[in-house]
Length: 397
Ligand SMILES: *Cc1c(COP(=O)(O)O)cnc(C)c1O
Image 1 (cartoon, rainbow, N blue to C red):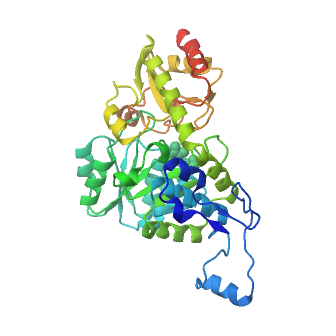
Image 2: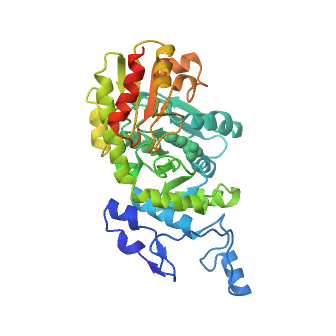
Image 3: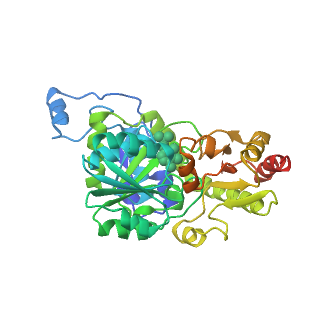
């Protein structure tokens, strides 16, 4: 067996994305091996006893460890600049496992109001049941972040840029506020990925990912990952081993291959999104475009400092009401009408009646989810064709 891990640590992100974490077997395979096995065979009864007791390192059962999952975890850790990482069965499993492992009854979460909808449901409906409360804060209101802390606050949870309005949150500033209150800053780095943003370098304590999105990048598999210091990741790993939201080795293998092209894809998503945002910004039937790559966006300067590109998701308000937004969406022929994002295929959605449909009318107003808002996750098709696709819809208003 060859193991490249140690020598790789000195390399650049592009090299790590292709090379980190691979352990070549005696077969000498060039591409990463896929270990589809639920358990592992021991050489003797004594070895079995030692593996089970932990006296000897090694695989026992794939709910605990699997070599393909391990390779993915090591590659993600290398890309995020983390000491350790653990794979999970989905992005939500990564968030749930982090909460269960690090929180107890009576603890408190401070969370950005603009996070993935299911994260809000998990915190309010389920963590609440076990006596963990959550306060939601407007993402860029730092006085509100400060004011939300209580002595019981253990976790601060944030996504940047936010979905769907692309609010950019200052990770370093929020990390300082969080650490003053001896809590942990958890960043959902799904929208940027380590190719565009490295929150641990800015002071965050833990990263969670939905690998389902850009890490796969081609809309095939569900998965997630938690990355950070070994002491924290080990706590999360302990829960995953006992509860079972483990990452499938097949999905880990898909993600490993996804990571190899991640930076190239993220840059292409970003340049397509920027071109589309600029075109929309100049269109007479568009009221407002939300994309941090536009100099008119309030978060532009911060995003330029904190990220290496502006990402693939944008949203915009058409002039008119729900009917106008639906007309634009229904007129598109290339874009897929689906809530998924981070795919090579461009997706288009009406947040007010789908991804954010559960919000009350007041919550929608607070969050800026108006009836004329459309979100696009810009894929890797020709931007010329994407513009023509939207133009048809806008012309029909
Ligand atoms: C999709 C998503 C999740 C949840 O991930 P799943 O893999 O669908 O469980 C969490 N956070 C963000 C930002 C997402 O977009």
